[in-house]
Length: 224
Image (cartoon, rainbow, N blue to C red):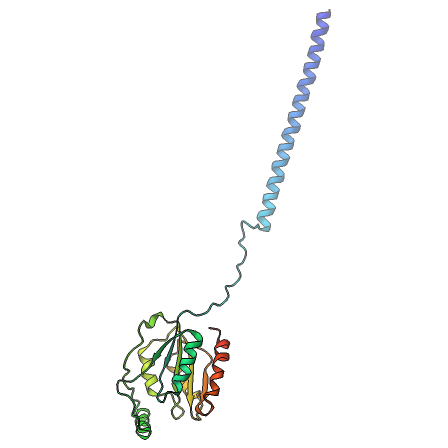
């Protein structure tokens, strides 16, 4: 009888332990299932709303940088435009190249006038003595010349016909006795339609050398 009591007690306790184990296992499984469901819901919500990993943030636009290597290319008959070119080269650190013809213009002023007028009347382009070495390495060209009878000198037309300025920055500067530079700028636009033409500087000979003080503010405005 006692043995039977122990067996019955043992059976009851064992059954109780087994039930608790089953119950505990069920609760644990339920918790695991619940955690998995929450994780799935979080993943679903994250996918619907977007996340830092799945959606790349928009990058801020890069600020416009300065141009690379620059050249000051100048034609000067009397030396006036050359003085402006030298000031620009000094202020910017650009290389300086003098545009010259194979046959120099006459020193006599009246003879020079007659030759220039013939060039304009006949559309003649005087031969250039030399082209710019390593031309393709330049990103910006400060282009200097005098204004002759309101026009771009034909020596400059010859230079532009031999040097491709497509994609380059052109910064014109000029000098004259009294004429403006509007027609010369129109000619540059026509001859270099694929270039990036920037603000021009025009100085009259009567205002030099005082007007050279305008060079530095002009360069600063350009921001090159």
